[in-house]
Image (tube, rainbow, N blue to C red; front, side, top):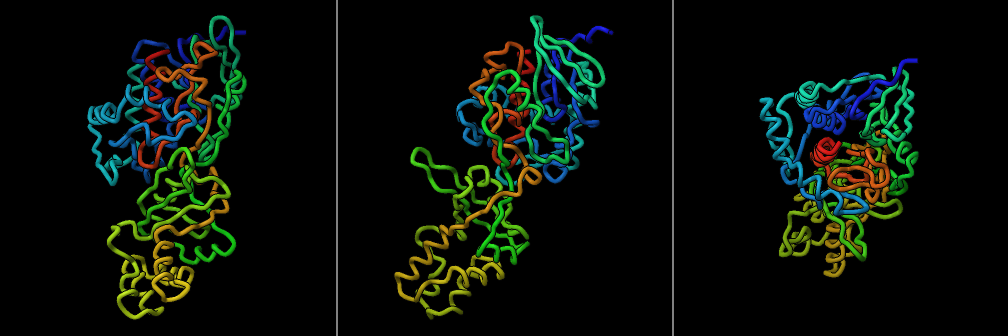
Length: 398
């Protein structure tokens, strides 16, 4: 039987984090094997940002990430910032533009980002091995022995960049979590994040408004210790419930059984009121509907006029209605799951990892990076920046 092929580093997963890590390590003259169970690298990159890849966010900061340890991401994010990746994009003459809230997109196709990463891997003489199925891994005194359907490999270090459970049609699996458990590491229970929410029961009437979109502020109940962020962006009603950037953002903080709260006029200051025309004019249903149309699309205004009308036309009733329109509770019955989730929250517990290198504390030479780790960014390029930053941290350490 032939002896295993020898490398310095094996990287499992040819997505954003895996490609970046392999390129970084390869350009340090490490012999790198990049294995993936899929036939093509970077499939999630290609569909991201509507096919234009929202590759980073210029407002990246640690407080834009969720983790059981909110401080963990600071080291890697400081080591490799959005400016570093932007410089790489500019080096390859990839035209890009800023959309809202600091989001950077390719002008043309996400293929440009994938081609950049593949070119960087080529510079580092990385050997890409696709269709690596039935992977089994053991650790010995000299490193890691990996066996798959194609061959056997041995390396001093092993980097797990296998991603989470989101978008299974692109090949997402629980392999990274299973491998972490194999080596005795703890897992923060994974869950879909940046995902549309479902409505049911009486609130299923909302689905009749499918296609309606409006600017809102979305929030969740505050906990005693910390106040979760709120998001002023678009809400989109779907055939099954709610989506749009505001809902995707708040979904990462939503807990089953809890409501979400929607402010339907987040642009109004304290000295202005949705219902001023009702207070100052005729106090009737027609005036209420007209007032709501000033701030909401017509179909949504008609819906809210029915389900959120004041209990009467007294000042107290109008004040209660005003408060409700700025803090309207909705009660999701669940999410659309991993099939529609942009990312997976939870994952390998950061207590297992060194923040500056992503190496496990208990297994020398074993690293976890990217989405498989319990670090999840906001919508808008933050998860790609975590992929780049955690990959570079590991790539410089292996």
